[in-house]
Length: 278
Image (cartoon, rainbow, N blue to C red; front, side):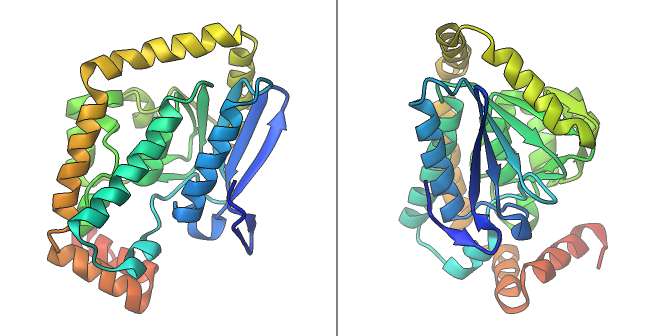
């Protein structure tokens, strides 16, 4: 696991609650934005859980005010312009990391509160099940600053029509009730019941025979694989490289404001263009 430590401690916290391993994204100051250290820590933690027989279910949640606000846009701005080869390596790597969660031998449950946006929604969709608090909000705002969706799991979960509406509008305020209606999440509970409800679901799964659970998860995943999931994700990576290397004015301006004035100012600029805010 990554040893990266910051003011809030390790970027990923791990605890075992009986047969359930609970992982907590721990970058609360940045709303648990996904940077390289976080992605490395997640990869190591899921690899470790896969090899431990005592772990039957994995729960993933976020510390602080949100589940995950997406990929770290400060890191993106600092890295500056990349060529097509660099973008392809990065996007392909991130998608393959999420596929490893989807294909993990143990069931993975996302426990979601407040913001679950862009890459955070990708992360939630890579999990097998999702329990959401009533205050959870979902969506993909990427298109509003000239970027694409990193890992296109969305249409496989909610269908093509709903996916097109979410992605093409850039809406990032899908409330939990609507998320439940379109199949983005499995259950919605009051905020103060989220941890208990998630653990109850995890414990219910953990009581079943591990070999059968693992095999049935693989069998259900096979439906997507036979339908062409991996080929579709690879195609999205190639198309996203085209977007990221197009040097679109909106993307350049968003990155400039992030570097010069900070991410909060860049988000205010983005929202003002589309919502008349700020």
